[in-house]
Length: 131
Image (cartoon, rainbow, N blue to C red; front, side, top):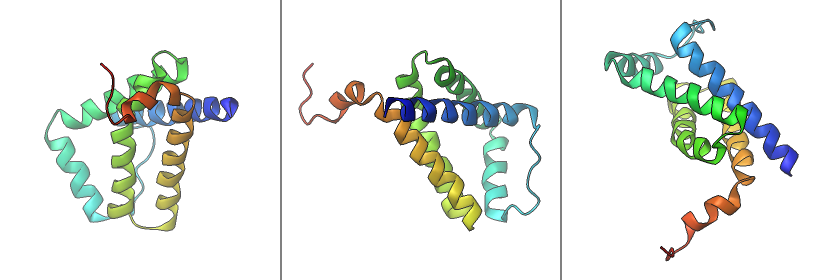
């Protein structure tokens, strides 16, 4: 299981690092058939002038943390809401089988990567944590 979790961590790190960099450098072409709701949402994030760079910068930094193994449990926690947002973005704004596969795989590899650090996360789920 440790090898699976480590592989998932590296894959997730690569995904976030590459797609985070793409947010700044635009080296992956944008698909031509993006639904209007997805374009509107993306344009709104870019219009704020800070939110899109914040998200993409976070993806690059946390992707590097996952790839290097430095502070990986923290990187997984920081990336969790981004992974959830990516899932909801594709679920609600870009319907279609191909898009559904991507977010499902991403959520699965995020969970698999986090399983290696379950002893660290377990106290977060205690009913009455000891301080």
